[in-house]
Amino acid sequence: MAPPTPLSTPERYGPTAIALHWLLALLIVGSFGVGLYMHELPNSLSKLKLYNYHKWAGTTILALSALRLLWRLTHRPPPDLPMPAWQAQAAHATHGLLYLMFFVVPLLGWAYSSASGFPIVWFGVLPLPDFVPVDKALAQAIKPWHGRAAWLLMLLVLAHVGAALKHHFIDRDTLLQRMRPGRA
Ligand code: HEM
Ligand code: HEM
Image (cartoon, protein in one colour):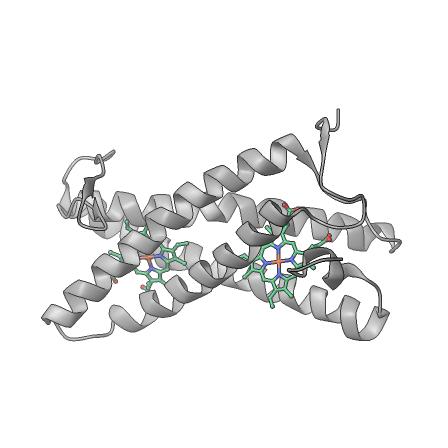
């Protein structure tokens, strides 16, 4: 059964969905870049700082994704634009996998951090609980999976952005307008 509350118009996502989409897009792509950069650095104070920023951004992504999922489950998205059924199914599957990875990637990062014995203090003020024990072998087992999951997330993002651009420049439909900030 479709959730009862419609988005603000039947043709567009509502302002909250649009704000969360673009804020999380920036945070996720930015965290990916910082993640790739920081782990190559030699040990130093700035590396330590970047690790903390990465962890704070990552746990913020996790919290905002929970809010976004809740919003998505209680608000109806605009109906599909006319397109071949396989394209609509591919879009729904990609969106579903993106949502899944919004949780898998940060949770693996958090588990790795806890298992390595570096608990997270969110923005230096809020200590977050460890949900796995300190265990170096476990940390080494989790570490590559955080990176692999982040790469899978980025591949999904690439496919997603490619599809959005195809709709805009080749199909020349209104898909991009549905997620564009500002008034319709
Ligand atoms: C240039 C970059 C991007 C463009 C142009 C773009 C465009 C769009 C558009 C037009 C939609 C609505 C699709 C529809 O109406 O069916 C959408 C939905 C979505 N986008 Fe993006 N997007 C971009 C980046 C991203 C990034 C980086 C992420 C994730 C990290 C992301 C995650 C999502 C998700 C999960 C949805 C589904 C929303 C829902 O139904 O709840 N997007 N995007
Ligand atoms: C969506 C959010 C996140 C993204 C996209 C992301 C992405 C990445 C990437 C690409 C790397 C480099 C991995 C490699 O090349 O081996 C990395 C490393 C790392 N991430 Fe994340 N991450 C996210 C969230 C988190 C969170 C929430 C934490 C912890 C609370 C975390 C902790 C770490 C740590 C400690 C490393 C360094 C691993 C090493 O030393 O090689 N990440 N992350």
